[in-house]
Length: 68
Image (cartoon, rainbow, N blue to C red; front, side, top):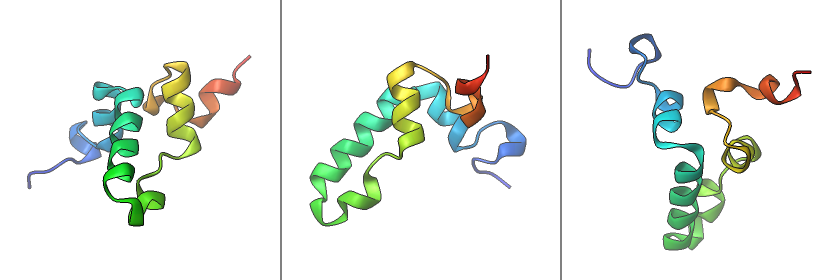
């Protein structure tokens, strides 16, 4: 079976890490502008925005920011 599966290391988080969270946020915000009636669907979540702002990888997980 072909596709973006996590077992093959090619899931959406892997793709997001490869492209960069800032790029993913930029593209989602652009889509929100193209489709204003669906802007809420395309709006980046707080985790994605946080990763984009700090340069953290998506695969680092939510707990990565709270390590001492």
